[in-house]
Image 1 (cartoon, helix red, strand yellow):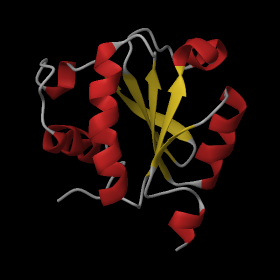
Image 2 (cartoon, one colour):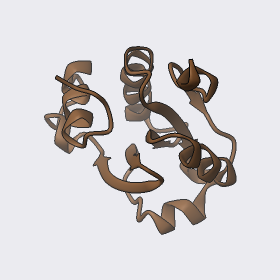
Image 3 (cartoon, rainbow, N blue to C red):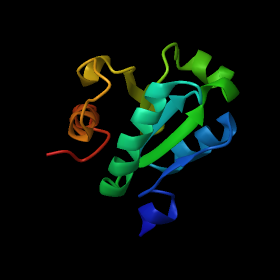
Length: 126
């Protein structure tokens, strides 16, 4: 219940960089997708994250438009879109950059992404 009240269980967009800091402060585990509207691979990532957000309510799943968050992209050294920032206890611990860790293919499975997030210990994966 507490997780759901903090926005867990759904994959949603946050409007600004300021919101990012607030969101990561209030949840232990956060996956934030830095995306661009014009990047086809971001839509692929969205599809998988929507499924995982419902399955892993222990983690907050967010997306942030990279073009509207230049400070954060600079600070987190985000150069490739899509990039997932994997945040634990308010600190960015790991990144999934592009699809390199996901088999370097556009048709990777949701399970592959789930396994990768599990490796980073940002979701409870068995």
